Amino acid sequence: GAGVSQSPRYKVAKRGQDVALRCDPISGHVSLFWYQQALGQGPEFLTYFQNEAQLDKSGLPSDRFFAERPEGSVSTLKIQRTQQEDSAVYLCASSLAKGQPWDEQYFGPGTRLTVT
Amino acid sequence: LAKTTQPISMDSYEGQEVNITCSHNNIATNDYITWYQQFPSQGPRFIIQGYKTKVTNEVASLFIPADRKSSTLSLPRVSLSDTAVYYCLVGDMNTGFQKLVFGTGTRLLVSP
Image (cartoon, rainbow over all chains, first blue to last red):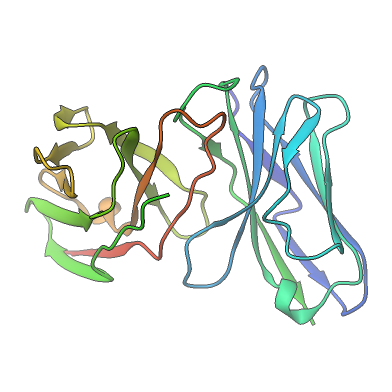
């Protein structure tokens, strides 16, 4: 079946603009994660949803970052008033698990955000 | 979450066996060891996971000694397509969700 998809794949934003990044998880996957990956670094956790509930947002770097998953499927990561330091690849992952330990996460290809 | 240490980079040639060792001295009793692979412009992909001794699947083997303070990912007969970054992760199997903590990984370059 289809994997995790993300759109757009590339986004260029001018400093101060708002952006919205979309994630379509694998159908039926309960858990959804967002990660941020800077160039040359490993992904860093941003936030986690179990169905529509956002259970952890401890990794969001500032209050300019907001994520939602209103119907428990598609998720959107929104960044307001983008700054140059927001430039990174934003990865979405989903897993079938619901509270199960160390279930495999399936990652999308990511959205590369460049803030100019 | 236990911290992991792995080599920054490794070089190999096609057809060779590659072993990437990860150190996790502070691993806890409930921690599992998981490896992910990441190709350029793609998200990470799960390779293998284990708790102790040896685990093997169609892609790789994972060797974990009795003290569990380290682990070795073994890739048999690598090809050019195995060029990627490999991440070793350690985490509590009892957490309510899997908050993956990636390090900088090991960049493997396979040459002809």
